[in-house]
Amino acid sequence: MAAAIETKKLTKTYKSRSLGAVNVVDELDLHVEEGEIFGFLGPNGAGKTTTIKMLLSIIYPTSGEGWVLGREIGDMEVHKVISYLPERPYYYEYMTGLELLMFYSSLFGMKDVERCKKLLERVNLAGDATKTISQYSKGMQQRIGLAQSLLNDPKLLFLDEPTGGLDPIAHTEIRDLILQFRDEGRTVFISSHELSEVERICDRVAIINRGKVVRQGKLSELLHGGRFEVIAENLDRSFEDTVKIPDAIVSYANGRLIVDMPEGEDLNALIDSIRSAKGTIVSVIPRRKRLEDLFVQTVRDTNQGAAR
Ligand SMILES: Nc1ncnc2c1ncn2[C@@H]1O[C@H](COP(=O)(O)OP(=O)(O)O)[C@@H](O)[C@H]1O
Ligand SMILES: [Mg+2]
Image 1 (cartoon, protein in one colour):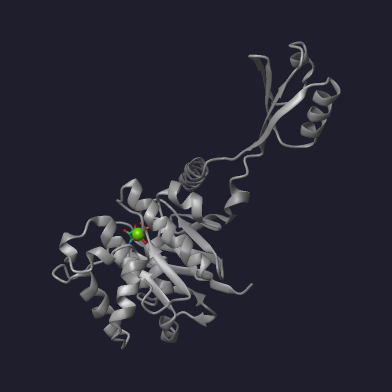
Image 2 (tube, rainbow, N blue to C red):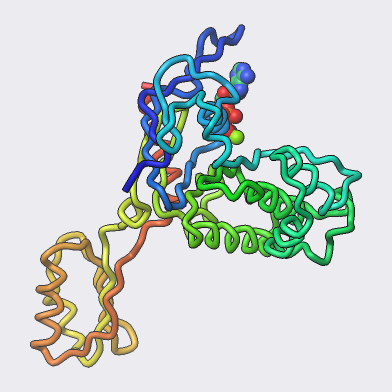
């Protein structure tokens, strides 16, 4: 599949009085495939917004290269087929939702009221079309932002912290919309420091810290915990003592054997021995790591590495 975004050693250096020159984005190599939801994750100040702004040619890289939908960054043609929802969008507060969409669509040279109304419906704001933005809640403002980002029917959307500061219901609404975007074949690049939302919708992620990618890959692979929990019934309690698996935690409660163990060949062997003892397998569950844990661990490790 073609790459929607590719960067090679993309770098942005800022000079500050106290710290001198700092690479806030530091030789970043990213690869985002077409049609996926890509999570760009990192703590505050990691360089997420700076990266997005370089990809959008809002600021220039100090060095390195990047391509968006096959076009080198700086090529403004690509703006026809991409869109951007900034971290803190600023809207004219006295405009109504419909007026706002009409205003932005006029920037694309369109004047299509029906299309704007349809987009309001899409984001569940049809009933609020005549309210002003100042009357919109934070969640409604984010949804009008998503409607605006669909105006040019983009192939690729950049959403910078789209669920920041929203309550759980608003989170869910935004998440559902983003999933629909992918179903329509769009690529979605989401930056976030809030992981629980991203965890449920991203196909692949990159975790960045201090401007560097520290992990990148399929979420399912990064979160693969490497442990399994096996539960079995109809076994004598003495069976517990026959389980000799390194690093396993074995317990027996309420007539059930519970084995929490590393993945590997021991798993099949355990299942075989349960069955030959005429036991019943109740469940074999792979235990996923939580993205939150992976994130904290990764960031902590790289910070320690940097401090050494
Ligand atoms: N225009 C600028 N001048 C100097 N430093 C900046 C500028 N913009 C961002 N930075 C610094 O770059 C770092 C990364 O910022 P940013 O990309 O906004 O992080 P994130 O979006 O991951 O929270 C921060 O330390 C920030 O203070
Ligand atoms: Mg940011």
